[in-house]
Image (cartoon, rainbow, N blue to C red; front, side):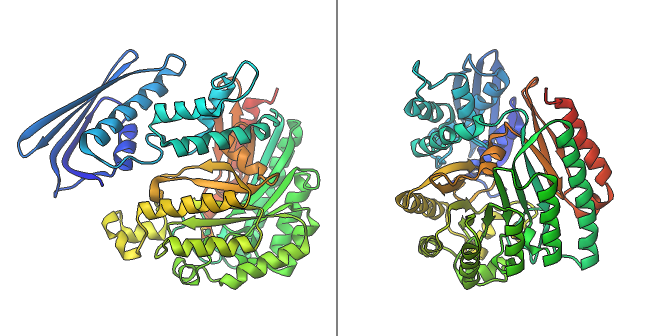
Length: 503
Ligand code: SF4
């Protein structure tokens, strides 16, 4: 349950921080409102943060107030934001009976990083070096008003990732290759992805990509870096026609030492793009991990979201991949798709598990800007019923069902991230069989390893040990700009790599 207010005003505190809390609790501004006015005042005096609410309803004024003190062991700026959020969230949930949300005020994309930072600082680590998960989970609940089961999940994932994160040093990097093409655009897609253009345009993209890759490989050699993982994503890389797909893999393999890396992943998201020739190319170029991402095994939903493949195509792709090699197979599913309920998802998960994947990532549908779904809703979430989307509570039941079944089949949660506008306000979790964790998935979430991005919409991220900041350079998301300005993007990447200097 949310509330509507006719007039909203905020004084003090970061407006984005306040907006995050209001959005998560479904507080909206509307003429047909529950309250005439909601005024929020955040007073920040030293380490004490006080939030006051003044609510006007039918001419009457109601005042609520909450104060909190910053933790001394955290950066004050971050603490101010956290406490503004926590005060406001607590006042709205306790004062107005709004529904608490599973992650409370934990709104960031990579919540496990916070726990890893605490552990690095010695919090929750005994004098014998044992990690006290209960102590960490209790702090997550207390600092972020997070549900205990979510705090336990975050702690489990954060701790499980540590050996992978710590095994990487300053000279170890991963490479991301962005292939921005798909056969059609899915209803919910907000990725920079273009319907596969005519051959001449694809050839032009390949030329530009080759320049981009050559420059990146040159920088890797110059700075004495070692590539740990390669991840070819998009888009759907396997949407490339056969000759381009094989050529792209050859260039990537030869430029980044593909036979020596710990992991070489190729996303073949749409099963109808997987052919015998492409499987053979992946074998030749030492690919170790392939993603087949049906999202659902319900044919009606596949048709609705704009896929052009059948449920049987998914099974065929798995069979052909399994017959061809001993690589690991990832698969992505989404909870909260239009028209689906728990029983539909139950069936999807059962069907996918019969295919014996090594890694299953359960996403929650996010209605993101730029997606056809969001545009059709035109920002009016009251029209959600047009798409027959499941309620948040149902989406959470789907996710709980996935956790129960996957744990029962000995899958372990190993990476987790959150997005804005997620149905159910839950999370995306990657589950793997023991020993089958995707190293790249951990590194990209951990943000401690340098990731070198090539291709359209790829980003390069370089953690700078001196400033503790992450230096970033982004390639253009739109294809024409990427093709036109490739030299500019190469130069930007060079600049941040040189800034770190890898000493
Ligand atoms: S397959 Fe993925 S990248 Fe392509 S349109 Fe669908 S969601 Fe977007």
